[in-house]
Image (tube, rainbow, N blue to C red; front, side, top):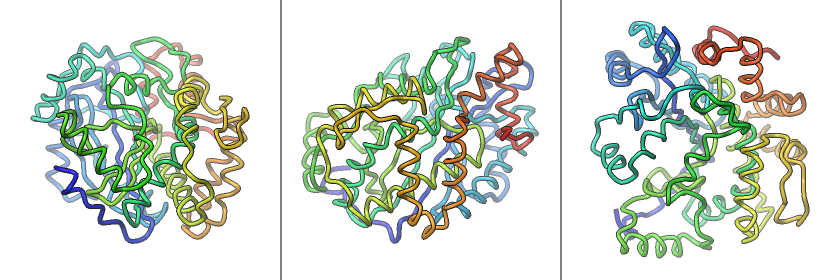
Length: 379
């Protein structure tokens, strides 16, 4: 794909779609299992909503929704896909779980899924490819044109700490409490083409940048950029990639609704101009959100002062209220606001379960119970 081929066709309306990376667990000690191929094979034998695809290792699958106008139809479809995958998992005697990381698996035990692209990534990135057995939610929001996509990407970058804190669900890695709310993103940061999009001002400037990087032989397509937020011209969307996979399908839909509503407010109201200082402060604010979650203290590049992430999220949710109502997302954002006010997070729940049960195996089992719809997170 060359820059000349990357037209941005745009999307009709402010649509939303979701990709979810999920864990496959065995039913003995709830470590990761290598059953992705068999699971996908069973799913493909029956009609089902959305799509179920392989991911980089054999212990993962990716669920893809179709395109939606708002929260309710997206939530219904995600539940339908979840139920289909759960039924197939039960036939294989394996379990499915959400969460941004598996609590105690060892990356060296993983096996790369046998596709040409994944084998290529292994050859390029070595052990990082196996360490990429982490689990994220990607949210696609439709944009009318390429210039709007560039603007939206820049302004959404200010809200990356919001997305991280609201979805944080990876406190454990390889049997240890990391002290982070989202440890998953530390793995992503190791890739050389991670981070944020350069400070271009238009789609034309972006194509010039892409052609330069392609000319150097560094990239061939947008997939080669592991940015936190990136334009996706083939879909006519902006893709937000910093969410941990949440513990429930309901929260996944609510997070997507937050991103969609925020994008609507940004594109409709144009409240801010792109600001270089957002990227000057970007890594600091991103770290704060990963480390402390909703309790983080950020530096606001526009206000030029420290702010509470909790207060910033709650203030943003108030601003978004009319846009949420217009999209039919009001109840979803209200549920997020209630969680923020009460201090409820997926990472906090996982740590609580570990304190109560004293076993990371039990934590993994309980994660699977939640995702598979067999239990609920207490209010």
